[in-house]
Length: 274
Image 1: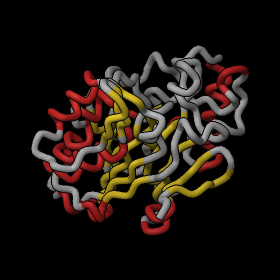
Image 2: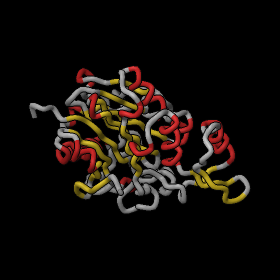
Image 3: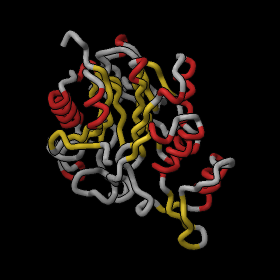
Image 4: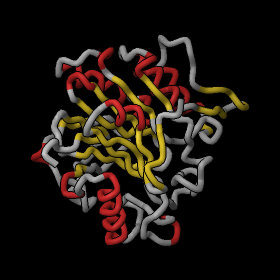
């Protein structure tokens, strides 16, 4: 079953999670319905891609209204395709919300168990990973491009939560819209990293097209890594939506040859007093 449903044209949300967890908001924006121009196709949420800051702030404020989570309560990151994950609290609210310059540096993942903090990260083909342990009210998000994936940012989130006393079988993961295997062609250099990551896993997430070229299923690779980290396969749900194929809804760095906007993943607990 497809985990994401449209709230309106501007955002998708994780339906079963939000149905089952009161006060949770979790999903991904599209590229539709904002104020950015030219290559950004309207709802660009990224400050770092050459768009006007005022347009991006307008778009972010629009989404804040749609999901009813104030922009001043968001946190954002300067994403570097690494695996640094930060635990954030209410004290961090506003960092990276309305400017790239004050975002958390060198960060590709967040988690928190506090209400009133929205974890946000930007995407244009990379894999959005959403994490929740309802029993512990812990939520998390990670940005997994191929580098972050093979360096196992998914496993590292699980290990962070284990330190918090959360077992892998108490964690649920949703793998969000990103580039599909048909659209993602890689070379031997990348596949060598994949092989090293899955050295003890029989199932492989890639197929040979011709010498030196492969299709790579990044979403499946992340699932295999999460399973290896102890998350039960039934706790992991994967979208079928592709950022490259679905060109009406999504930005794609590869399809658009680098000149494109960014979608925004978001997850947070609303404050119960709201």
